[in-house]
Amino acid sequence: MSRIMVTEMKGRFLTLKCLHCKEPKCMEACKEDAITKIDGKVILDVDKCTGCWDCVDACPFKSIQKDEVRKIAVKCDFCKGYDDQACVTSCPTDALMIVEVGKS
Image 1 (cartoon, rainbow, N blue to C red):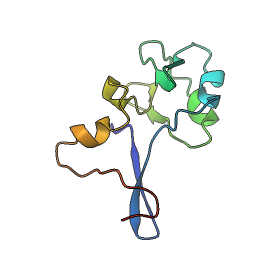
Image 2: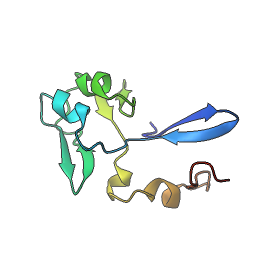
Image 3: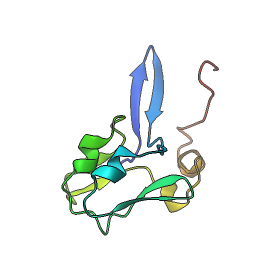
């Protein structure tokens, strides 16, 4: 299951992923303390997640997804490398790139 979402807006495809909020609503909503901040990154520990999905409902950007198969919440974790370009550098088909908004 992808932890980033792709959406089309005005003829362009955009990726939606966790914005690592300064005051994460998802972390506040998590009763299991499965969501923490490490070095400014919002990290979800899937081993602690019980699948209540309160964090999914709390995220104003809808960046956390329900993994219906494993019954847990999942979100971008930078491929566990905490690198904000990990999705681009690890994409096996080079389908992703980082561009500045308004630039092509």
